[in-house]
Image 1 (tube, rainbow, N blue to C red):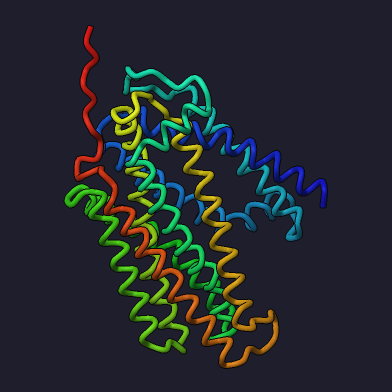
Image 2: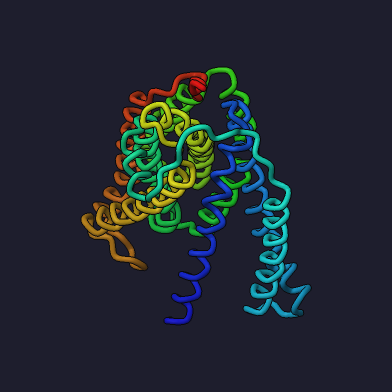
Length: 334
């Protein structure tokens, strides 16, 4: 257990060291909000394609490499994927070119950078909306397998629903990208969250006891989730310029690093809320649940995401970034 924990901590630390500057590149590729939204959407699209590729090819590729169907197959596939991924990341680092020049001073300490973020209303409200959204979708996604196992008595269908949600993401991302160019990112968030809230209200009003209907509901919710994630990553680079005007400092790595940290905090909060909620209604794993427990679990699936999606809309309405998103910085006097 100690060696596994140590390996995971080392891997995830290295992952953060690569992921934060990789995400921060979004702000340097272009100063145009439309370009940044396009990059965010394509990154999500290729990320979804990679997830599908790994899901479909891990066992066949691992079996081909090792001649085994046991754990050695997964290890072989992991080594291949890691090697290919590392090579691609090195190519990106060697060929990446910045198109946005930095004209404002960069904070000399982490404390100054964090103070600068705290004074950036665009970043604070966007992060609040993101955290509320993450809590909502994490509770919903983590409830899926419980719902199929204990309320529908069909756990295999839950796995199929999760796979279908991944495929739908690849279809929905380009559609959200096109719509965002027409109506703007903030309006897109409100539309996506509004559709999700309507879906949850319908789900709460209709007692779903059929696998097919539950799968349709989850696919619809996945379309909403993809839209919200796209808006967040499209708007996040634009908070950097807003912060420059508000505080006089230019921060990029801190913007993306703190955002990644807040995501993890929101996931932990959602997991705690889900666990406490299920425990409070008498849930005991791997036994037949009482009707009161099942009703309480179903209420959790509806009420918690609904409340936090509503909170995300409140935070987004307070966000100062409008349709154009990225403010134009005035040139410094010579």
